Image (tube, rainbow over all chains, first blue to last red; front, side, top):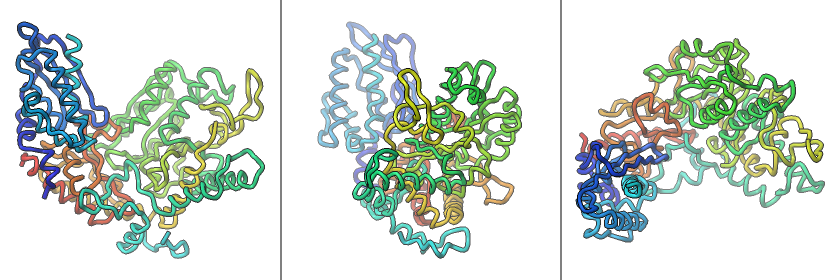
Length: 146
Length: 441
């Protein structure tokens, strides 16, 4: 039997996103792109930012290889992006980083992070925070580039 | 320590009762992790330490701590004697002479020491004696595709600094080093052949004699990465006829911060030093200095004294148990691990299937890296950790060998003398449940 903590880490929504991979498959016409590697395990993600109208981000597309946490994290992030401005996204990246550093103390703001709050359980596992952060760091970098 | 030095085991393995006594010597093995007794199967990354080794390091600081090789007081004498006795103990353990053993911080530093010594020779240091270490365009360094980054990146950098070319011997589909390719690549241009005795990913014992013969036929130097062999099998570096070898203390019951470089005496005395400064000199002028003979010419600055002494204590512990016995016990555990994991649907173990020592097949150590279809190694490791089972996940500092088999990461279980069949069974049972937990089966 898996412990309650492990079930909390691998919630159904995370396992679903790890399989469905929303936003998977890099699309052209990116305004910014970023390639990030987790050197401890070799996991990687390439993420493109696609701008829409009025300075809003229409979507992201991504590809990569990784564990269920980093894959689900990218998929959840793809769902979150929809028509936000770069500033609004940076605020959400900040909120997610704060959640990841909370060692389980925060539940996460669903208004800001949507279903990505399900990744809150990761913050109890210091060895996995980098997995969850990988696509968010890629988005932060890609936004800075354009 | 509970091992009786006067009554060595008769057969080349351990009895379960002996392993239980050994386990009692390792304080950490009695702790629990996530509500379960710790099952430590990550000794390939670092081993646990017996109480005797911990006590020796503590006792050095409590009773004998002083600067070695300087000072005339009693403590300085005691510390120096302990330090040099430790060198002799480690030398005997690997079939070498005392002056062929250089203390380093770790195996990585040992390989860098050779590579930078060769760089310094190439830059003109070391006079005529260092001629064989000089590299340039047209010279070749040969490694294999299964190397740990520590035995790959320093050679890449050496080649880039000197203009030499790095050649890589490939693996067959089972993970064996391709000796046919080795015979083609190793030739008159080859100056160095560097390879692992045992792969830290594939767990197979590599064909040292064949590679040494090929290298020496062309006058090339052999550098052996013994990190995964020195802790696990009887090792005689003179018999293996390698020119240099490295291994780390923390993988063989010793502390972190100490590793060993072995070099044939005449080579060490011809190789220009890597780190320079205090303790490695004879006469220091204002613009130039003369160096001590090996090993001290490679031991600049304050040394890792407590670690070296504790490593010697670890070596004493291993010798008292018996390296042949440890090797036999781990082969049994390794076979159980390989068979158990291979029998799980959706699980694939990397590397050659293996065969017992002395047969025609390839010998395996007690280590298995594997992939679980549809589940990333990090997730496998997390599931096992939830049950107190410690394994390594990732590329194990060997990205090329993972790429060779089309994967980025594996889960690795690695056993040591203190592991039991029950440890192996716990890991195998947990791995068997991984795919259903992650809803892929």
